[in-house]
Length: 125
Picture 1 (cartoon, rainbow, N blue to C red):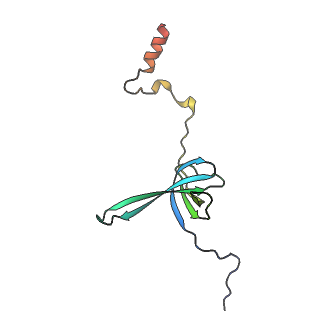
Picture 2: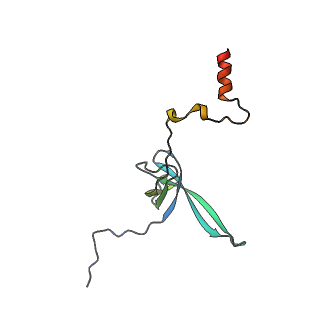
Picture 3: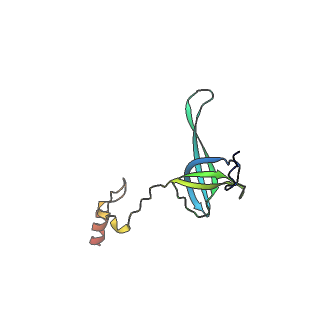
């Protein structure tokens, strides 16, 4: 007769969702947008449905754009009922040093004066 392995405690299955972080501006809280594809009941077209969930992020490891797994937990506040399980894919963080930007190469937008015209006007006065 086999004995059950008692090294890991038996816990119930928690609901899990996978989504993308859309906001990480709060302390220890992230907003995760979960997208699911469903068939429209009348038109039978595939449509995307989105829902936002507030999740607890204790170490503040998730950043905007990361794909994360959130796990159901006890209510932590009025809106927070999920916690961060793991970060599945990190978002690409692009950083540009201020010295690397060449102001002569920046194109002016329509209706604004160019940098060269402003510099020549400044030299004349």
